Amino acid sequence: FSRKMKTNAIIILGPTSSGKTELSKALQEAFLPQVWLSFSVDSLIYSLPPSVLERCNKQDDWNGVDGNLLSMSAVSCLKCLLSSGNRVIFDTVIPSETRFTELQSALSEFRHYLVELKCEWKEIERRTSSRVDRSISEASRSYKATTSHLKPDSVFDSSELSASEMAERILTQIDLKEKKENQAAHTTPASAPR
Image (cartoon, rainbow, N blue to C red):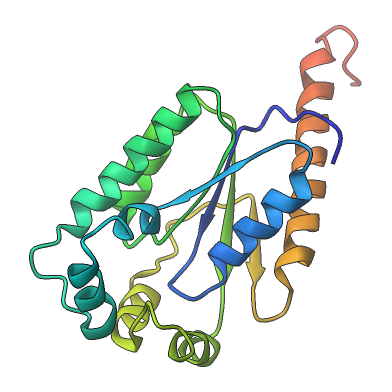
C-alpha cells in the first residue's frame, strides 16, 4: 500500500472469537510500508498478574477485575496513541450503546473507519474451544451482548472471508471513501452539477 491515508484509526468491533485480532494483523501487513499499531482491551487484560489472568481466562472468574475500567482505560489509551500521531487499529467488544457512544466521543477528533465483524455462534464456539485464553461462557456473553446499535462503514462475516481478504476490501473501501470526500471538498457550489 503506497498512498498515505487521512484515516488514522480503524476500529474493529465484534464478539469474542469473531476474528478481530486476525483482521488487525492482516491490516497491519496490508498497510506496509506504513506502520500501524495494533491495540485492544486485551492489551491491558494481558498486563494483569499471571494468576489473575489465568483465573479470568480458564474459569471466567473476573472477581476483583473491573472490566468497565479496563474498557474505559483502553479507549483513553487509544485516544492518547492517536493524539501522539500514531495510526492505530483498535479491536474491541462493544457490549452496549453506552460503550459505543463513549468510543465515538473519544474518536470525534480523528479520522476513523469502523468495521463490524459478524460470525455465526457455532463458528465462534468452535474457535473459542480451540483457544486457551477464552471460555465458552465469556464468548457466549459477548455474542449475546453484541447489539445492533453500530453504524459501521463495513460489515463482514468472518466465517465467509479470510482476514487477508477482508483487509484488502477494507483498504479499497477506505480509499474510495477518501477519494469521494476529496472530490466533494473540491466541488464548489458554482461548479456542482444541477
